[in-house]
Image 1: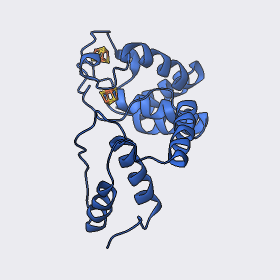
Image 2: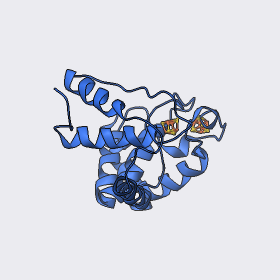
Image 3: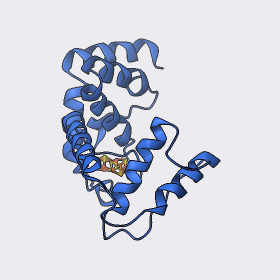
Length: 175
Ligand code: SF4
Ligand code: SF4
């Protein structure tokens, strides 16, 4: 059980590890593993883990991936939830997830998934409930300007026809 990774996921994980180990500042990498195969693949990846281990082709591939991600991701939220809970009940990572989905999938997908999972909750979790206390931003490891991005996301996810429709549905269905 060693050698090149067997799956596409394993190959992607190995490239990500190599990128980390390629940084001279990184001395330790922690990874969640849930199978013996993952342990084996990670051990293989660690064997040649030194700064400068990335090949020119791998560096080019990573640049391409970064470019694609930056074009399709509106907020660099990893979903870690360190910013939660919000005292006003705002679903910060959920809102950013569906906002990003509007650009990685389609506007329709992002808005409709958001409507199904967030808009019809018994306790609303809209971005507009934010009172700007800033508690969340002090916990965000990605240093996201959460208050500003929430306003942007809310505008995109809930255009006025959506608000009218969601309000009507809530009135009759969510009690
Ligand atoms: S700034 Fe807004 S989203 Fe952040 S914790 Fe305060 S109320 Fe919640
Ligand atoms: S702490 Fe930052 S990165 Fe983590 S879920 Fe909250 S907004 Fe996203």
